[in-house]
Length: 476
Image (cartoon, rainbow, N blue to C red; front, side, top):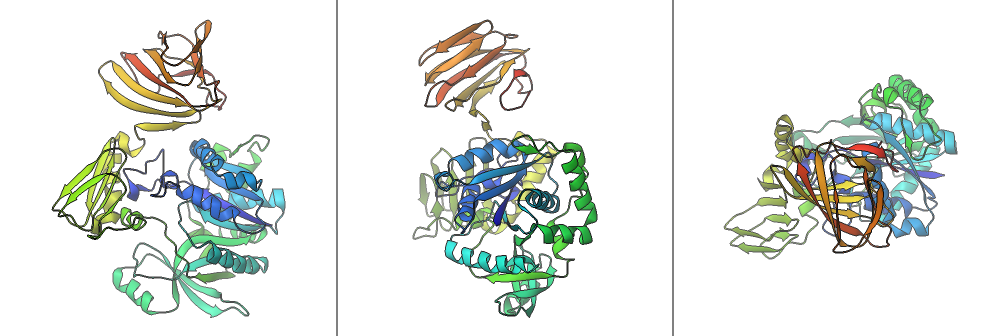
């Protein structure tokens, strides 16, 4: 069987301020409204014969991932079975793939062909992608560890490269001569002039047994640490959360360094389909059609004597006068303005914000929870105002606060509220008051979203002032 393995995570710091640690690149919406994760899933389940998908992601992203998948009606119609391996801590791609290979070997057998798909890639040509996967699958069945090499279009210095060696018999593929690091511009230009080099896509194909054998030979510490993790992991739970103690001991190393650069039987399938890892705002801007002055916008704008700019905003109208070659990215709590040529340097801004422990590194004002979302509308001394959206059938935890009281006003939908000893139905244009120290819970019993405004008052309003007494999402 062919089993797609979707690797989802990563901060995506070059797409700040939209990509944050709590909402990384795979989950941000592209100009067409779909996320990269949604597109990756659609691409995977469109392959012939796919009935199962295994997703390896951080446990903090499980509910986000599940919600993204549930919005895919094709997945439901094809009765795709979704399995998850949740990482307690990020340990790079080698431990993640080792865990996927072990899981697939135990559940489906060592001959299972694994197709490794990072969740932050964009490929629009499904037909060419399917053809390349078919070629890679045949090689994988012969024991090859296969990577996909993208035909370069520019002397890109942000990608690694693969040098092709001898051609394989009866195949368009080649044995890999070597993997090379991200080059300087002069070296990249030389690679482009040669027909032997392709971009390293980060997508792979091999059988579970072949990868485990390669790990045992090339990266035994990675394999042994993941095997120890599995021995201490409870596989009777759904989803499966990998043992934190064991997985934290796994080496932090990529599959390229750990295996692909060291193994003997490694092949590259050259492909020419459109591919991007959307690694910068300049790359994302290319997804939007330009106007007659080269400007690309995904919001309401007024542009006067402005050329070759990309403008994006969540909510506000943006005006620009007399500027050229700028990236203007607006969110409710952070604004990025950069020259197009400095798009790769956005990560340096994030690095500085991390040193300051700035909140915009981690969260948006709109925060996702298993039950829905909340948005901080305003806060000041002694108060905080939130807009809370609870999905149909979902429920907040039964909780209490030591330092704050809360006023809940329902503006649409219906809320079933536990407020101390009482259970009350709060409908539109009705409210309830919850004093500090009172156990409370909100459940949405309806079939539409419940939207309410929460007013917090007190001496301390931090999110850590929550004592969870009961929680259906396992957060107690």
